[in-house]
Image (cartoon, rainbow, N blue to C red; front, top):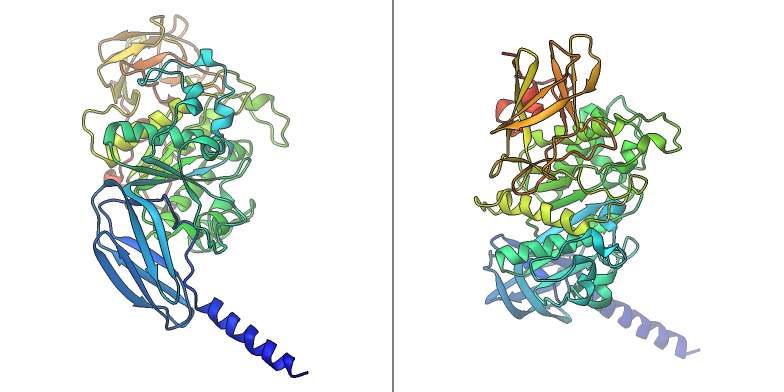
Length: 506
């Protein structure tokens, strides 16, 4: 009998000792990359009132855990460093995080096309790819990837919010860790490193088949008046809570988003625009920075209309959804890449060209987030239309070095209509910085559409090889992104959306 009180005392002391240990979130670990040039939050849990000290790069900060056991310190901004360093967190216990670098950090999220692994990439037909600048086929990247300055963190939905005593979530981008990692995110990181020459860290948090709603917190929906009278399906917060929220406030440079297929199947347009806007603003709020760049992927060609769905989809469902994606460019610090040239099989919703997806996202980041004025990040974007007799004269922005045909053949993907609204195939040709569009049976054209079909893979590009963004000149932008208000001129809305509101036929 006397042994029981002794055992109880021992268990009590062990329990108290365990409670006293400093615990870190999983995103803080060995091999991680910390964001350069910004204040860096280091946080965790400990016993209420426990003193915690953080040491890194000559900085030594001390704080105390609050009544709930939470603590955090903020390191002053650091310069990029490829020299592995040690980050020490001391309380009752001491944690030494090894091999820490300082550079650029991006969070990459979405559904299966973002989750698409490097293992899958290695099984793509090599004939679909051309050699990268380092001299090998990107399909074979797993055989060559060994840059210790690119680090990856793959979010595990079931484990991210749980304590981790091993601190092994971050890995160098190679071997088995890379095989299971996002191909778009990795190739994005590789292109960034090539241009910035600083350590790059990428976090992949994606779920195949996911709609956008689970990536948005319930609170974010409730706080937006737009959703007051709407019934929200798609389980709001289901993925946000375990896969995004625990990452904040880990300091980031920005976000990448590759999602939409599951919502396109629901024939969403304006509603998706609002949901994506809500996601962007709520994620930025979670990181306390409404200026965090957010770059995303316009969906690639696919036979949506041939899919067996409850809703009857048409060949225009995809173009209309892309238009909904484009509408979100009204938010500042956003960008969208076009992928109309990156579908190999129209029955496969997973385009294989993930190396090019990553590269184009990197171009968007380099040109905008990193102010690289010499980088062309987008293909031609419709600006305005003039009607001259039987011809529609189209003008574009994002010309790069000039307009071109990818295959040196006549331009494809254009249709034209007169006052009757009946669109017919059109002839289109380049004339300097313009595209001239006409059809013999449309003597008085009033509208032009480009790539306005789910299977369209047109050949209009700029000389940098980036494809033109799909558009329709007959879209008056009747639906505004911000309910009850007009889009402000300074909102950053670019391309066909802004110009379609001011289009003139002269």
